[in-house]
Length: 329
Image (tube, rainbow, N blue to C red; front, side):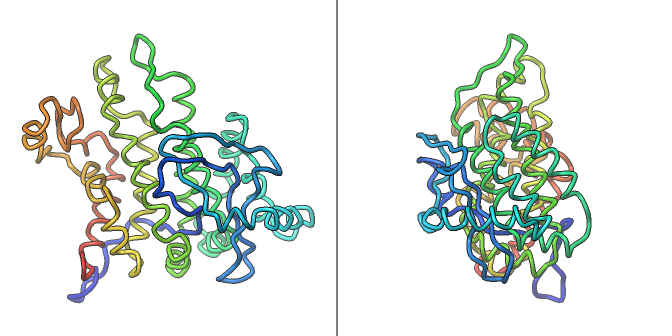
């Protein structure tokens, strides 16, 4: 914590990096290319594979992020540069990220690539994680996250007679969980790398992070699962919320990030859902809209935080605590 001689409440390590601009616009087209950077300096050029030169996805997507025009304008240059690095074997991390960057369709290919990526990213060497961020790892995985959330958000819910989600929905939830896990691993970097990462990403990925948290509290999904006696939130959605709140807890320690994070639309209310284990405002919600439970979640018999993991609640508390100790919040 800042001030009063107290230190900030810090959840286990995390860091950040650049991602495609304008995630705040949740209606539009989503390019499939993923952004990378050359790692040559702190102020390196944005790097993103051009969807037109490889597999691509274009079409109307509800609640998806819109690619920044600045990044798109550099796509062809970046594509050739990244390909050159890959072919010359100049950097193992760059080569590895190049492969992740190209994994677009089919979904099974993306899932297999993500699973392999976790083996490479799961370590505690801060210098290596710093290098991963310098090479654009967070850029790529945040854009992967925007892509998957974008093509699934707003899709009508379907389930079997037992209330189990369809295979497609299960795979999509699992993919989001894998990407969030990779982001948490990448952000086990040094404090300076975390600060650099937020400065590069800025406010652009905050709406996406809110959306990942809120996916766990989808009223329609909760209602279907509870109707069939299933746990309120699936394992993959719990993991995704846990990992993305861990990234948020790291961002909350960056001085320049405290106000943007705290003032991001729905950020505090979403974090409150994660930590609410008592259903404090259930009566208020029911009075406003009969049938809603704690924090407005339909069918919630108790605090929504009980649907989350203990680690997710810890991360959310750490984030809110750190944000509270900033003048202006």
